[in-house]
Length: 291
Picture (tube, rainbow, N blue to C red):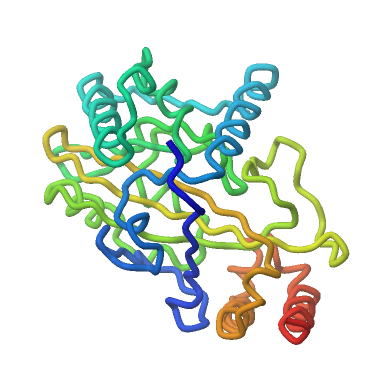
């Protein structure tokens, strides 16, 4: 069941026009201007069918291609954890969207994930406090391969991110899990086409072409602590909008330009923007003036 227009999030506005690498956690109840959608763990909107089609296309490509294209990665997730997550997702869909049981009764978690706009992962917490990424079902990644992340601890998963070393990921995850918290965070970047699926091996990466346009990608990430099984459900809901939509609002446009200009060389490289930085800033400034 769809519930209206997609939510909109602008992390660079929340950061006052700066690009920041931080935990950036907000309580689920935080109001970002999207009404009831902001308080939902699982969002469903009028673009639901497009997300499901993109997921199905990724699964078809994975089935026909090499292992690196794999969508689902199971690194020995404990059966009781997988069952608990499955039951949580089903109950939440009923609670939030009044989805009938027949729509969500699938044989396993991976099939259930194919009916969500969100991708998902499961983080398990060992007794000594170390985290482990035990399961992923990620069809719409932002330039990374799920196969390379499975089984790793939180710090190792995020090691390529410039500036991430300052965040004690294991302690953060442990607190969310043990307290049963539900938190929201956002990451964002720019991409050179409108595809939700930006897997690096699916052949859609292209150079920046001002004539072709530019898109903003924002990921709403929801972290759900599950203390009963010492695990966390990690959800990723990507949104992709034409940058022109952002530039149409002067304050948001200036915040986006400021955030790009504030990126370090390492951050630009990680985001795939370093070689295009000046051209992108010029493109954004021209678009801001035109709007």
